[in-house]
Image (tube, rainbow, N blue to C red; front, side):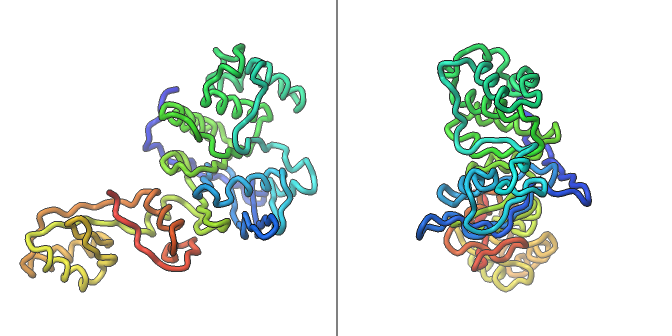
Amino acid sequence: MTEAPADNPAPVAKSVPGEAEPLEVRGLVKRYGDLTAVAGVDLTVRAGDVYGYLGPNGAGKTTSLRMMLGLIRPTEGSVRLFGRDPQVTVRALEGVAGFVEAPTFYPYLSGRRNLELLAAFDGDGASSRIDDALETVELSHRGGDRVGGYSHGMRQRLGIAAALLRAPKLLLLDEPTTGLDPGGMRDMRVLVRRLAGQGITIVLSSHVLTEVEEVCNRVAIVRSGKIVYEGEIADLKRAAGMSYRLSTTDDDKALAVCRVQPGISDVRLKEGRILFTADESAVAELSQALIEAGALIRALAPQTASLEDLFFSFTEDGGRADVPGSSGEHAEAVEAAR
């Protein structure tokens, strides 16, 4: 596959007023005896979203997706797929497809034959979409080969081809790049972008932050079964503020100036450099204050926090409470990008 530019803008959601959202989850809880796997998830996926569902392993992502697809029953809460409850009617799954964990096929049959069997089960013209599905995931040339000879990445793409047989409007993918090499991860990113470009709303569960940052426009970050942030990636980065790395002719004086200068926050000394968070106007005033204090600037470099920085600030002990949409217990600064 040809890699799309990494700086392509994220898809823009296009919800239609009055229409039900592709996915709405409210108060979702799943308990197994004394273990609470999901502890009250609320999220909304809008039409056109490529929505990243982020969290460390064991955070409850897969369990949540199973409930979203109606595979297991919630202990509490509700799921609506285009306004329908998958626990009440199988019609809720119309226009919905995807896979949880790894897709599974008959290894002794060809990729095409596996799709033919699935299409026969689905009906509704699914068999007529096999060629297009194989072409979309770039497996047309291997469709006649046994799945047992496929690489892991090819089996993942065949799983997406199987989902496309249903002509989905909403596609849920659970860790689609797990176990892939860098080339396979690149191909999967390209494929997700292509599907989004075809108007499919996508929910992408992952703990691989680089892929989410490159293809998703909105995210929910889950920690210990609870959502700690939901919203636009761009809003999350803006709210986190811009970090700066500073070096001067007298860092002791500069550190003292930074700590009392209005608009300068999260000041700390790390690896021989002064790090702080501020907006552009405060930095301009800081430059003047440093000159007046006799600490001349050797280097002053802005650093935008990456999604990885923000993810760890939410999911490590403490969490954040200083970002709109977050529900962390204590405000903690995002570490400057290394």
